[in-house]
Length: 310
Image (tube, rainbow, N blue to C red; front, top):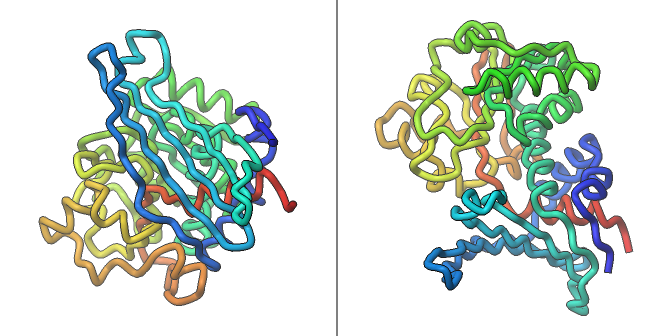
């Protein structure tokens, strides 16, 4: 069985190839049942939450991502989240590979945002604003540059030192990158605004966003989380990774409830875009929004790319 640690997983998932692997898998489709959530008593008074995310494609593979969340790990000096991906032979059930789940998730998440931007961002989009300074945020410039001519990156974070560190790292990778403290000003001049935070209240406001801009929302994956205010949705063309986002993300649940977002604005999913069933951006002045919550389809596509053909 092949074992890929974090570094080997990153090397096996070059961003351009990963974006195209996701495009092909969304177009083709696979079986991806709802994730299973298990509450496991740890024996020390705490509870381990384990999420199981399966997906399979006949003739290609069957995989399961296990994500374990242990909030008490902060006191142990350990990350709260650990993940592993196991890929099996779909016919025999024999394990083919054990893959670092955190690296796989981070890279496929950034690649999914780039895939959406290939349909929804203006073809001449050059300026990217990243809101957030974590692991996924660090991958977004590389991903977006696979589909749009990004040559200017600005980074905003709640911790200015983290934003400055990310900007410095991006400059080392050849990007014209700088940290910013004026989020409104940076958002108003950006072609693409990508948010990858754990915010529970809006950090981006629609009145800041210009005509023709594209807003990419990654962070809100529960109904209690939000990155965008109601104005971000008004008069925008909206795309989602899957229909599950409509129930899982506070960024969609809240504006749908308030009436700021009309379901008729939701143009379609990544699968519908990749199959040519719905149009992407219609003109240069249209303002677009993409909301993702993640899907096991993306994990399987990434795992099959990482392992390669049999």
